[in-house]
Length: 505
Image 1 (cartoon, rainbow, N blue to C red):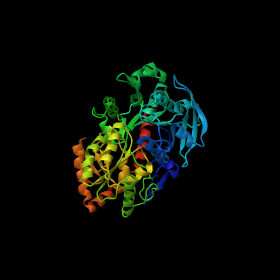
Image 2 (cartoon, one colour):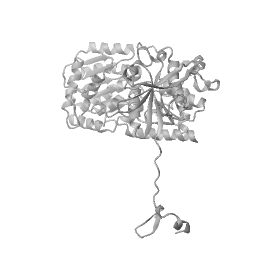
Image 3 (cartoon, rainbow, N blue to C red):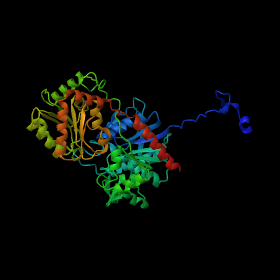
Image 4 (cartoon, one colour):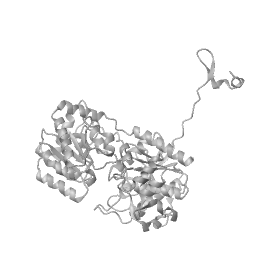
C-alpha cells in the first residue's frame, strides 16, 4: 500500500477476507430528477380527439417517479369546467400577433400539476381543440397553437412569473413543435424533446403568417415547406431530440414512402443520433378484472365475463347472440385506418357467419359507407357513428378479433387495448403494429394494403376460431403481453438526459 493510501482517512477503505485494506465502494449520489414540462394540445382527463390525449394523460404520470413533470395545455371550456381549483399564477407576454395569456395551475386528484394557458379569445369556443366539430379547422389555429408553443418557451426562459422552471420541454406533435424553434431563436438554455405521434399532421399555414407568429427573418427557412409554413418542420429542425411512438415508424419516416416530404430531414436527424422510437404503453386502468366500464370482469383463467361483455356489446348494436366470431372496429373512420378495406371485406365476414361491431367517426363518405353496410347486413353488422368510452371498452372485452388494417400507424393504441382484453388484432404490418403484434401468437399481420390481403388474414382468424384451444392460447399470450408505461418511461428519461447533455455541451 502506498504512503498516500496509508495516510488517507481509514473510512475510505475496508478490509477484505485476508485482512488487506481495499478502497471502499464510493456512493454516487443519484442525479436530481429533471424538471420536465409536458406540452400537449389535448389530454384525456379533459378532452380527447385521438391517441395523443391518452398519452398526455398516461406518460406524465408514469414519469413522476423519475422526473418533476408538469403538463401545459390550453384552457378549453372542458378544461375550465374541470378546473375548480384553478389558480392564476403567472402571465406570458405577447409575441408579434400572439396575444398575452394568463397561466393558471391546478392539481389533479392524484397530485399531477397541470398548467393551463388562459385566453378566452383563443380557446373559449365549442368543438374540438382543432375545429368547430364539422371538419373544418379554426381559421386562427396558427396563432392558437403558436401561443401554446410560445408559452412553453417563455416558461422555460423564466419569463412567465412562475417559481418553477423546466430544464426539458417535452413537445408533442405540430401544436407544440414551434416551442423548440422559439427556444433556439431566443437563446434559451433549455433542452427540447419533440415526439411525433403522426407525421401526416404538420401544422401547415400560409408562409405569410410567419411574421405574425414572431418568426425572425433568419428563421423562415427552418419552417418553409413547399411554399407554406410548417410548425412541425421548425420543431424537427431545432429539437435536441426527436422521437416517434414506435421503432418501426421511426425507421419508416426516414423513407420517401412514409416521410410525408420530410424524409430527408428526418434521415439526417437519425444519422446524427437525434431520432429514435419509443413504443407507447397503456395505463393500468385497462384491466379486465377491475375495469368499471365492463359488463363483467374476466381473466385468463375465468372467461365467462368475456362472453358476458360480448352479449352486452351485441345488444347495444341490436345484434343477436351468435356462435360465430365477433369482430370489432374501434377507430377513426378515415382512409389512413383502412376503413375502405373493411367495407370491402365485411360482406364476406357476414356471409361466413361472423359479426362486426363498428364505433367511431371520421370522413363523411366512410361514415355513410359503414351505415349502409349495417343496413345491408342486419343482424351481422352494427355501426355507431360517434364514440362512447364504456361501449368501446365492452367491444374490446367482448370481441374475438379487432380489425385494424391501417395504411400507416405510428404506434396505435387500439391493438394494445384489444390484446389486454383478449381480442386478437388483425392488423397490417406497418409502424407500431409490427412492434406490438406477434403474428400467429398475439394476433395476425398482413403486408399489402389491399382488401385481398385483409381477406386472407381474416380467413386465418376464422380457422383459429374453429380451434378453441388454439384461440384460448393466443388470447392468453395477448393478455400477458407487457404493455404498460414502465419501459417507455425509462426510455423517455434517458431521452431527456441526452437532450440535456446536448444543451450543456
